[in-house]
Amino acid sequence: MTTHETAAEDREFLLVEAFRGLAAALVVYTHYWASDATDLPWLRFSHTGVDLFFVLSGYVFGPYFFGKPIALFSFWTRRFFRIYPLYLLALACYLLEKVIRDIPLLYLFEHLSFTYVQSKAMAFYYNPPFWSLPAEVCFYLALPFIAWMMQLAKRSSQGMLGFGILTLLALAARLLLGSHANYDEENQAFILLHHLPGLAIEFLMGAWVWHWARQSENLGFALSLGLLACVAWAAFAWYFGKVGDQGIQASSLRGQLGALAALCYACILYASLRWLRVRRSSNVSSSSGLGFVCVWAGRLSYGTYLFHIAALRATQALVDQHSLELHLSPQWLALGLTVSTSLLVHRYWEDPWRSFGRRLADSIGR
Image 1 (cartoon, one colour):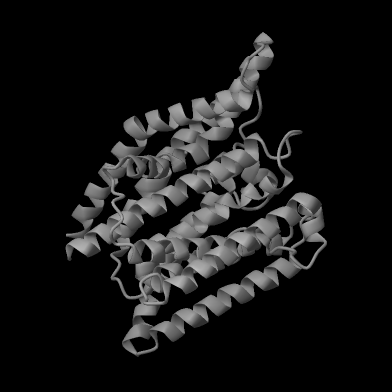
Image 2: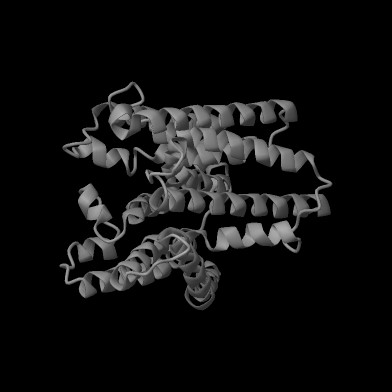
């Protein structure tokens, strides 16, 4: 690998980590400030930060859709230790909260096994952001088999056709489920819309970005597409802030707003990657100040996603119990607690388990 290729990969890594941090920040804003009396209505669209996470997952694993070999058990081992230990620690925190508040510990097996998909109440029972994790897990379970089918198609010179067909099927599933989803009754279409196959198109968007970012399209086209996506995101955000969930479900965008937001994020990510690849003279690296911020934004994104609700609940309970008068709102205190908690658990729990998982996966792959 040449020096330019290594530098390009380093910059792409930093960009993806920065986008992870952005996704986590959007979700935190949704739960801390969205719908507050002083919030900006269009920023309520920040709940689509979770759709950015799905796009980024598709991008990171994009190579497997286009021919990179995948070692089944090694891959699953890495994914298990990336997701489950920190999730288990977070779940324990929310279980403790229920015990302290003398609330029944329902759906425990479902939450231990990522099978809490039967209803919104079940998925949100301990921590609302938990809802997205079963979709991620299903994606990890399905990816090796999808990659295997894509490799078979590639051997028959139909690789891109096969991935195109897969994308069309995922898009058709999304459109069909969105049109039949009943948000009040939470019917089967509603459930599948918020898991696989409904979310498959968002992961595949990320995979397409990985592929297209390595092509030689004109930079002007990529930047124009990214700018158009920013405008589209702003338009969707304005509309959502104006009509809310009820208005969306009564409109032609029913069930599709998350996918449209994911498309915007995919185009913005694509434009950013193309810009980085063309601008080879960029001195941004992991050792630079900006690079340091990007790296840690990514490292803390998962912990932030899992623990920010616990931090907010703890802070609000402390303020209410002691009738504290603070110069800062509970949300800002909770944000500080979230970042501190994420740093600690990353250092002493998340990273050690990830390192163990990598070593175990390497031994399995030998």
